[in-house]
Image (cartoon, rainbow, N blue to C red; front, side, top):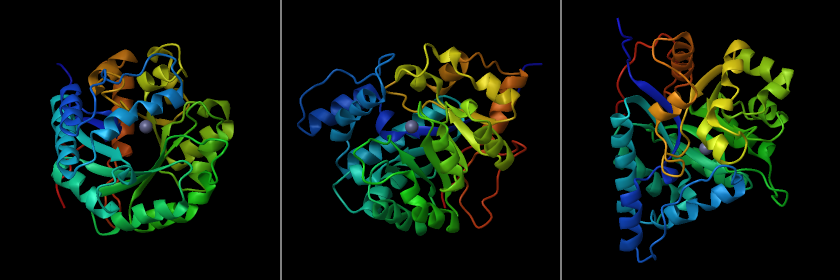
Length: 319
Ligand SMILES: [Zn+2]
């Protein structure tokens, strides 16, 4: 009998990297920006060059209507992929048409309860900015998590550990906590993300096997790694998506969710991402990846219940 799928889980998808190409071009034209070729990551391009691709999408996302439209389309696309639980992330401070709370409201209106929203601080930003994101999340239950995205640079005044107060408050008000860490950088960053920021999930975590301490910490605390093989390949951390070490991660007891990162930039969707790493429905690795993904769900509420049996289906409801 074929396996019965109860809906895929997508935990790590950036709104501003997951526009439809046609929408991007229409919004840029409407905003008066010159045409550009569709921004795509190229294998081996490096993280810094990859991050520059977002300039073209962010230019198109500077009105409430544009942001609402793209948030809605991200949900429609996810549903078409067979995703039953979507968490969509973005950095409100990069959309400058309004106050952070107003910008967040536009995205919440666009998703209309079909996804949980994760707010992204960016490496190097003022800790006060991350604290403002947490404040915006406080009374908006559609916001389910806090993230630290981008990557650290030598000239940054602030580093990961400087965001401890914001992350502590995020945990206190019931937000899930995730951090882009170990994305080709030493595994101590993963350890710090968990020990100092209280991360429930780690974005990428590609170097985790370089540190027994990091592996033990993640296994002990049940931290879920959001693995993004195609993205890692594109930024030059892997020679091919199927060289991702996630099979080894599962062997050592880590919880793993396979994610796309950016469907536009990487020209990928979740079924393709899963196929690229050889995950077949009905196999043990598939079941373990789906269970790991469900374990990582950020569900806002006093008890922050964690799904472990996979009984939930469908998208989170509006609150
Ligand atoms: Zn990411």
